[in-house]
Image 1 (tube, one colour):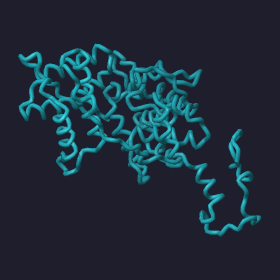
Image 2: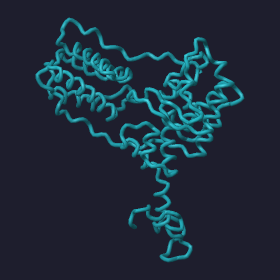
Image 3: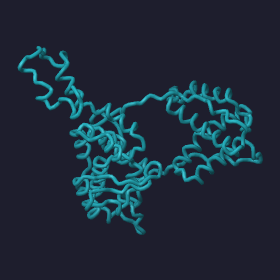
Length: 351
């Protein structure tokens, strides 16, 4: 699949002659983030978000940081709330929160570096964000249906099968998959080295024997045909002999999910949701799932405990009088106990 040329966000315009201008301060803040080793993806995202604010201020004649007050920031917050996209839909609260959080970051920096006397955004309250469950999660048969879509009699189909197996086995992010190098796969230990994951953190992730077998088959039979010297070292290569971009990976995986006709949509992150849910339903401790996915906060992983409710469903079926078509009568011999179903109290927990 040929890669589409990705165009990055427009950079902020030249700071201009006013060193105390809002635009000049924004440029200085972005440079400050780079100096402190924030990832380039983070900096690019901040460029996009702060540009909205700088342009909004410029349209209202506000060009200097010292002119921005808390009421002005609250006015910007109301503007974001009432803003409508080209299709008439409002901005999501996640988007509103991201834009406002970026503004708070700018003014925190300006106050910290004494470019302004006080921080007008210090007490700005951000929108409350609810925790949203994953829209779709695949079952084991559905995963197998997706994995069966690539035509493994063809080189690219074999590559794609190995790629999908890697996603399913590890649950790594699409960018982590794109950055995966040939030497990052350790067959003897059954691990992959995830380099520069989210937050610029390296980690080791387990990978299953089946995925390793497909990777080895691809590496021996297909990858040499795709390599263009000098070899870039990426494990999975495009027809041009280059590593994948995250966007191209999403399109490739989404196409196979759609082709499986499951009534569910998603790309690389769909497999990530699925890995977490299936591991939890299989009895994995949530902290091990946290390590597998590379989450910095346990609370991020715990969202999947609300999706993996197979055990709760079994308890509900065993105990709720209206859970089945056959009415349950107390003490009826046909009604198995929780202990008989293997659903008794957890060890060390009083019933």
